[in-house]
Image (cartoon, rainbow, N blue to C red):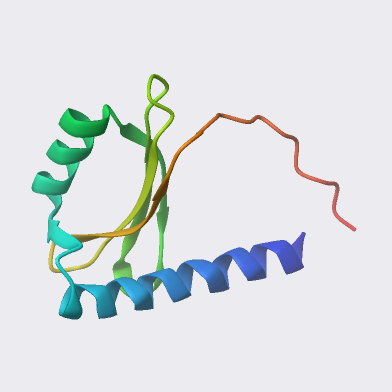
Length: 101
């Protein structure tokens, strides 16, 4: 379990660094209210999960039960939200975590 948690933390850290680079180089970032409005109106997505990342960034997962679309965003301290990944066929899973080794 500790190895899995470490890998997830490293992956999230990499996503935050990528978001900072994307913000400087791409139109994939916008003020958070604008991003949330677009996700809701265009795709019917609502927030399904949230987590804290390095340097105070916030990672969120949005998804729609109707369309099956999903989006992962990272919001930076300056209020800009960057799209990190998006896709289709989202489904909720309730799996038990493996026991500690």
